[in-house]
Amino acid sequence: MKGTGTASILAQMVGDNNTLKTAVYIQNRVPCKAAPETPYKRWTGKMPSLHHLHVWGCPAKARLYNPELKKLDYRTVRCYFIGYSERSKGYRFDCPSRHMEIVETNRANFLDNDRFS
Image (cartoon, rainbow, N blue to C red; front, side, top):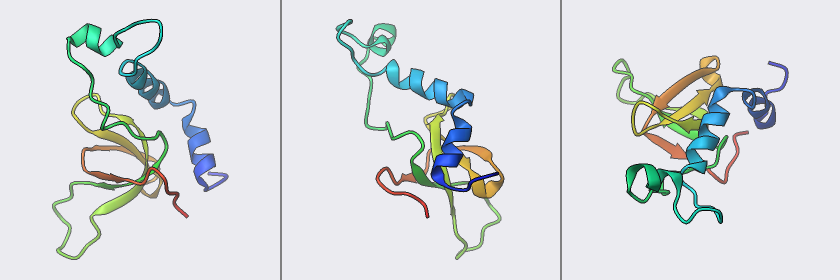
């Protein structure tokens, strides 16, 4: 990887399919001037919940399931939020410390206003 900063990591992910999926996910839940209802409400008949939306690319500390961890081991992994899970009520994260592995979990602490150093 050429650069190691947040901007270089996010620049590599722009061409990724996760970016487009996240944009569509948000677009379907946010109202616009042209239509009085959101696409989500027209499809399901329910108002969408927006409390789980986060800034795309924001740093987070995700807790991954690992039964081999000892009592005092670190249980979180530094990663970047890249989207919403399609299989469950969770989030997708890119973890550079895990060699660009994409993980899904619903246990995370989002740092929407922070940056990793």
